[in-house]
Length: 157
Image (cartoon, rainbow, N blue to C red):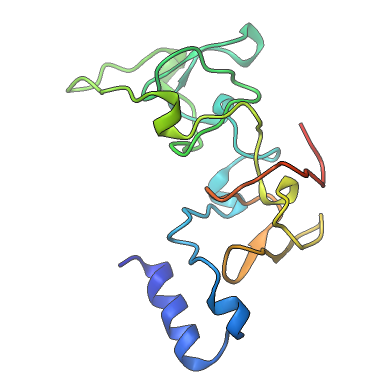
């Protein structure tokens, strides 16, 4: 059990959350990244992931873990971790890395994604607020795997 689950369970027992809030998903379950960990001032997208090999200005690139051509500006998946690949080239890893299909990784070309452009976000553009699906407060430039941009609001890339 992750720390997020422990803290949420303690909050539930203490009565900190309302009954509606108790039905929401724990941040650890949805892999919520606060803005500082997400590491991007525009939201999650492949061009800011350490696994992306290529250049945002050069068009599609590759991913160390996801099969096929990857769009740096608008591609995003559930394997996103902020950072830069070593010297812009695929690193030599001690063992081969098996790539997964885009559908398994949750790859979409709707990014960058962040709470502020998700239909479930109910906060302000200048900080944080509630989410319809995630327990507790989320940050405008945070993100999780429950992102849904069908009715985008807030800024877009």
